Length: 398
Image (cartoon, rainbow, N blue to C red; front, side, top):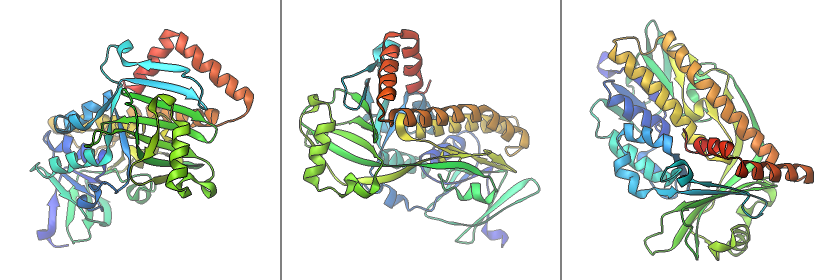
């Protein structure tokens, strides 16, 4: 490889999604030279029909976006979650979380995914110490002595002290590093869509645990026509009889029947998207001069809406360690630093993976004794203030 095509960085990040690009922005604004490589075209990622998802940002994750330098620009586009209502199979509310009970304005905010991407892409392009390559593919990677080398499809070679894989559940970096995973399918898929409804949502998020899987309603800002909007994450088991195949009229009727009556009539607003649900957890988060973050290290069930928030806890932890190492003129890819990162993050991630897995198993079981146990459990938490406060702070990422 010719020397003219070489580019030196402290850190090279593979994956320019919300976790990878947030990490790149934080590091590059705190004294590190960073290269972030992503195979997707940023222009395509910013289109409304790219994936249709909305993202729940917890109060804890807000700090990450502030550190990345984009919160001030996107805050107005996020719809606050002030209260959370939890029910079972369309029952009345069994458990109610109120943000005022923990002296906060909101548990979190709902953003359209493209809003976060737009903010991050715009920020990344303005940072002189961030070499943002997208669209670009990785041709080869290797570790030699005290550096890692990544070559892209345009012939450029990046030399860095540390390689970070932020490239999702099917991580190329994880596979290259030979890190095995524990994973399984839930035999569920999530239908994601935006809907409009007659009456305002009052900044309430709803989680209805149903036999076919959780049904979540997440508040969004009204559209430019003043119509009330929410995002839906509808989990279902039988892909052969999927609601994805229903006509819009049938789908709208099913939506209205699943929404609490206070919303009034509910109608689909845009496309439906579907995603298979499963769990994946890496046996290790690190290898020689390599670290994994977010979905590359762990992908969980969306039952608690904590997927990206858990990834942002990785970002906060690893960025703190790397910034400190840079300030102390230490090796950013040292085994000591990487072992420390893994020690700090593994227990939290495994606990959340186990919790969401267990909740899905418990709440997707239609057998009457299990439903009775669920109802009693939710009512007990509602009445026991210390337990209720614990779960509320968990929901806030604190």
